[in-house]
Image (cartoon, rainbow, N blue to C red; front, top):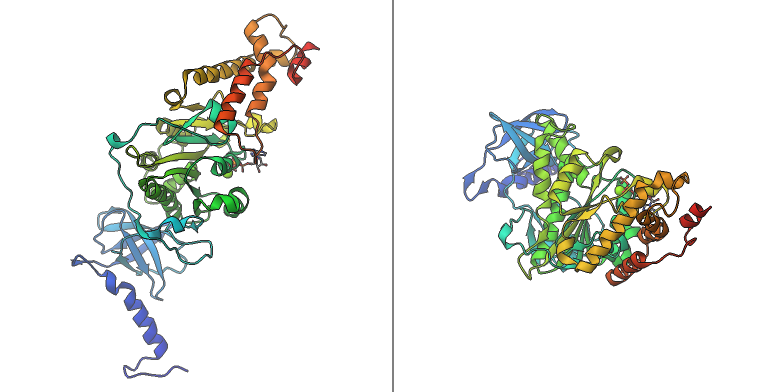
Length: 469
Ligand SMILES: Nc1ncnc2c1ncn2[C@@H]1O[C@H](COP(=O)(O)OP(=O)(O)OP(=O)(O)O)[C@@H](O)[C@H]1O
Ligand SMILES: [Mg+2]
């Protein structure tokens, strides 16, 4: 039974009112600026519409229902007096007339070396039941800008522990690459291999918009206890609100920036850039932006560079962010607008081929279609020549593949094709690598040399013998 107090209110109601008042009391004034409070007038699909607010785009607000429950939302646009908001979580239970109060508190989280090993959501809340985040510093979520002239050029190679990438698509410290493939071709597995094998001080993993089940799998099986010790994971699965997914992508970049600014070499892996673009598409369409290319509104193509440009090198001696972004090429179409836009902004891409995956060649790296734009500036001339020779041989084999497979090619007709046929099994074997096998840079280069130089004896290798018959 509740006891009436002096003010005549039952205790439970009094507590409820007090807690509701506490909610906004400290937030009402920012630098003595009066804060106008708004009201929700409309909620259609994902968007909330409010009137009475005087706020700018990007402002965080709290939407408070009459029952005291609150939802965080962000201002994503306006039209006349109406302000459009996008909630960060689902809005079940929201009522017309709910109050909208701009939040003045700085958005951020505690961070430090203690953050390593933790898993957080898009707004920096822990997801791993290991208690609240602790850290020596407060990380402000606002992105940092680097003057392009202060970016140290890519000048060193980075060992990612995957032979085909180390030798043929060499990655530089501070480079940003795309990992492009259709669904189920092995993007996530390859990403996992690089997470474990790359020589980086810190790994930041953004799991954006993928299956919820994969988050746990990635942490337990791919990263493992060893891997998670030097990693921070930001996860926002497919069932999160689009704003949360967007924030998670930005937070992964922000965390990477923090460690880079401490002078560390960071590896940032984001799975996937496509889901980030799709989250932005959902938001933009919901507030009425017209679709342009394949249903993607123009703002999506502006958001991709905004995210990707945050990675890279800082000034000399100040750490780096090497980043890999997976890009889903729908229906294996490399002309997909997101893939196209990512290719244009990134410093290279690794393409995975469904054909290779179907043949059981893993990682299914399509060497001919992949390129590292930084490679020519960071590897010696010899290495570059060997890489080109590898591609020439592979491409020569592929051009004649049909003839060879039906036995219509007669050995001796063309010396280059003969060389390609002889070495093809070695080229194939060179690309293949087990999930748990790490191949360091010197070994990768030595393997490349031996594959190029191998003077295969006639009749050796499975395919060569096939053509002898
Ligand atoms: N290196 C590998 N060795 C053996 N099998 C692999 C390898 N890479 C991928 N696979 C197989 O391919 C399947 C799909 O891989 P993965 O989940 O990485 O694909 P994905 O491209 O990330 O797919 P999605 O687009 O659906 O996220 C794996 O479950 C596994 O069976
Ligand atoms: Mg995947």
